[in-house]
Image 1 (cartoon, rainbow, N blue to C red):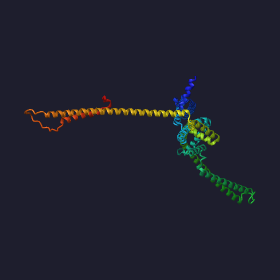
Image 2: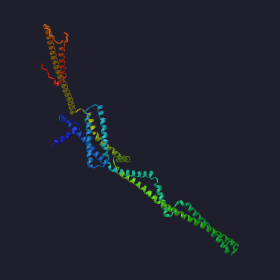
Image 3: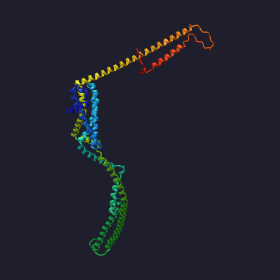
Image 4: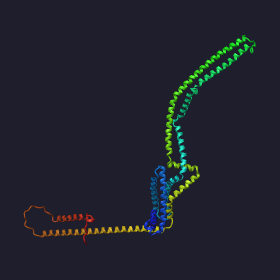
Length: 465
């Protein structure tokens, strides 16, 4: 049971950048590297959970698949953080540490923002869901208003008013048609004229009657001149009443005919206008339904971020909580780099000294090995050159010996008495200084020497000294 925790601790130490060969010589550094490895695993775990939430929110995939993607992203983040740690060797120089830490901190902050965003959205998901419903309703209302002002549907209000007017005209038999105001005004005028004529006729009839009774006028009862005059005036007014009544009836008949024609025209146009209204309304409803469907399914990360920003603008407490939560997640992400940076400013530990010694020793050993290889190669080349020179000297000695022998043989032949001449085919005479055979022997030896020099070192056979 003790071996398993030890192996886990060693694995975490190696994950943090420790060298297993040095941990045995400097066991005191093991706890520090184990702690760094734990921090790396913590950041990787947060990254895995964050990526799982992000994939589920953005794509709506199945949770097991989202967790699998999250584990892959967590492994990537752990590897990146490990690279940042391993690349920062112990150095107490402020400038060098800052130069090394600034890009690493920048990368860690970027990773922290990427990791903290899905987690923050998940923490405030209830408030965000409520705000998203409000935002979707506002978007639907805005789109509906946009459709109302669209040029394709700009005539809908006028069309609805026309249909309502036509329906009212048909229902009232044309009496509600405002276009018949002139005809109705004529009826009203004729009715007023008739009423006025009737009133005057009644007055004249009353005057004639009271002249007949003697209760007014001259006071003489009977059919006298005053009565006859009053009666004539009453009868004349009766003719005016009859004419006014006829005019009224004609105006009423004209108005009735106009109303009938208006109702007939309104009825014939009503069907066409209703069909056009139904077509435009159906197209408008189709577009609105398509937008509503897309709007209801638009609860992705971007919309959730926008909802979170709106909530932060409306609620200062929520904005502060969001900021602190994001800062917490980012701090966890940049913690490994910060710890490594702080450890660099501390005195060198035994592990750091051993690592420096080991690295220096490895370099020196490699340099010595390289020097030894160069020395051996140089000695081998010198031996090959010496052997080649010795072989060439021996060939030169052989050539010189052959040349001396050839010259001695030529001198001996010249010293002997000449034999009796024998008639033979004449040969071209050769000068005494002609060294043709010697030059031919030297040329052949030189060719053999050049061929032997061009041989590869592996083909050369060293001559024993």
